[in-house]
Length: 313
Length: 235
Image 1 (spheres, rainbow over the protein chains, first blue to last red):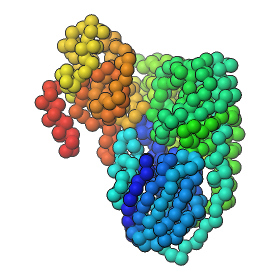
Image 2 (cartoon, rainbow over the protein chains, first blue to last red):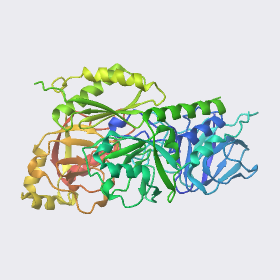
Image 3 (cartoon, rainbow over the protein chains, first blue to last red):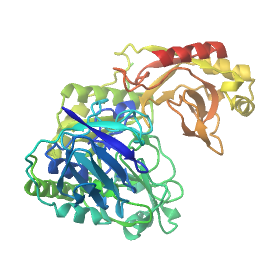
Image 4 (cartoon, rainbow over the protein chains, first blue to last red):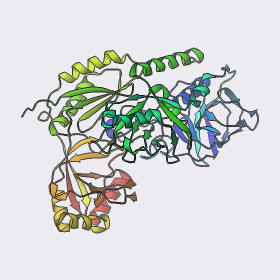
């Protein structure tokens, strides 16, 4: 059975996202999905959903919604003020019960870049190519293939009570605040002059406001010696750090082009990909070099910690 | 016709993507090896593989990051050693793509003609006479990387990319020609437009073109273009 979620104010860029649609890169479709999968997964676990249920992803701004039949929700991700018209302030990273007709306000994102709203049983849009994620540029998936607008009506799961409340997940927010991002050097880095290749690890960068779900542009010391030029197009992945002619790196985001022709100096460790989804313009970031082995160990450690703190219901 | 398979190299891109390189260059033999490698991997049905991104001379294999990837790497290495040139095994499809080359649909056609020292009519007849091959689909949903643009039609990109290129636009950039699957900014010189939808996520085969297809462009006039575009809309 479904309930209705009415969009009163959508926010700047609010989309339906799940964990993405792997398996279609050979059609030019990147995996996509939530830019910060960790926050979405935690949100889903808090309301008793499977990890891959669809939620709403907010970007820098929040929104204003009405739940006609009441719902079990959680808000995770960056820092925002959240309140219900009947229940008052709602802490983030915690399950909350909204009653029938209750209005939910999510304020501007004060820290980090993206906030996730999860609802018990998920946002019920049709799956396209195996996923409910919105593919903004190709305009499919999610709600009509686009960002939400005022007046949109979404179907969501209905609240069942009594509810089992789940505790706060403290390590989630801490982890996502880190701005030192672990990355693995690529064989391509041999294309760069050695002293230039060292630059990526030694210098700090600022996140440019020319950043979106497709890529995060970084600005740093004019490091033109890093410059690598063009190469034959090949497969890319989320977290790849490309260096175009101007020497200013681009970190590919979840909606990245599936293939690209700029030399790749490093690739962000899977464990740190959720942090990329929380980078906002003017954030200062650094990269720390890790081995493939260490990156996999860190992922396994984080996954084990998540299973322990917040096992799926 | 059998050529040796180009030297295979394996390297990790990040912690869960394995890049398989077939030689250093985008040769026909490398492309055939990429296609054969994709088939081998699909047939092997390794459950750790979540995605494959073929390109000119590389194949990127994405694994579930939680799998035991050391073991998987040796499995893939073994499979890659058994690939062979598959160029003659597949009878590839020939897809005809209608293109309106009239100047209203081809804002850079005259510039390309001047650059190539050919008449507008020559550019159109040469572009439509050639047979192209889809190397792979990539960059954006439904974008086909085509090989086979005649040398006489090579032309550089625009110095200032357009903010808005209409969906279906057919362009030239260097030694490549291609069709924009949707409206985007773009720097290719536009010599025509196709009324066909290159990508439709709601179809069982969302991409009109697939790797290995042969492609020919068929000139249509503005009236035919509109009729075909309308048919696509209602389909």
